[in-house]
Length: 188
Image (cartoon, rainbow, N blue to C red; front, side, top):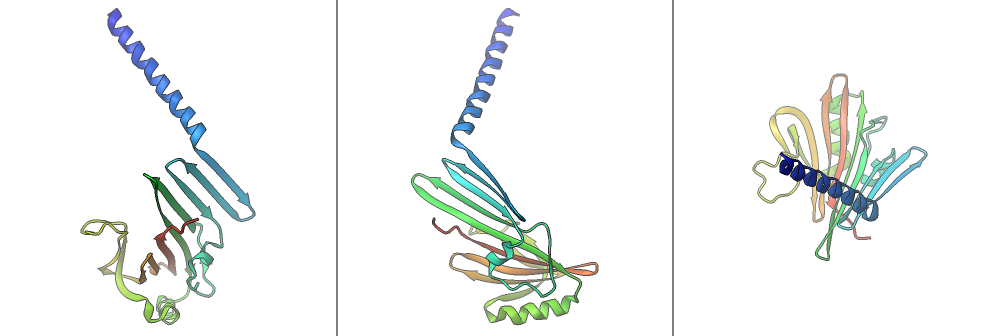
C-alpha cells in the first residue's frame, strides 16, 4: 500500500510540475492584447509558432470591398479573423473576413441588386448553401458549395489568393446577407 501511495504521490507531483511549467511557458511566450476603442473591439494572441487576431467592428464590411445592400443593418456576428503561423522558418496564414447584414426587403429585389452590382465576375448559384463540409473535397481547400433543395443564393469569385462572395438566405420577414472573403494572409 505504501508503494502505491508513493507512486501516486510522485504522479501527482509530476502533474503539478507539468501544469506550473505550462503556465510559465504561456506567461513567457504568449502575448494577449485586448483593445477597446469606441465601437471597435479586437483581441490579438501572439505565440512563437503563430498569431491570431480577431476584430469585431462595424467597419469590418469595409475591408471586404463588397457592396452592402442599401438600408441593410449589420448583425452582431460580423468579425475579421487573421491566422498566421510559422513552421521551420516558413510563414503562412489565412485572412477570414465575414460580415452579416439583414434587410426586410423582398428576396428577389435583393438578389437582383447583387446580380447587377457584382456583375459577370461572380458566379451565381441557387440552392442550399453548405459551408465547411469537407466530404468529397479532394484539394483540401475551404469548401463552400450550393446543393439542390434550398432557396439560398450564393455569388462567388475565385481568385488566385482565395475566395470572395455574397450569400443570401431567406428568413421569415427578412433576408440575411453574408459577405465574406477567405485569402492567404498578406505579409507584414
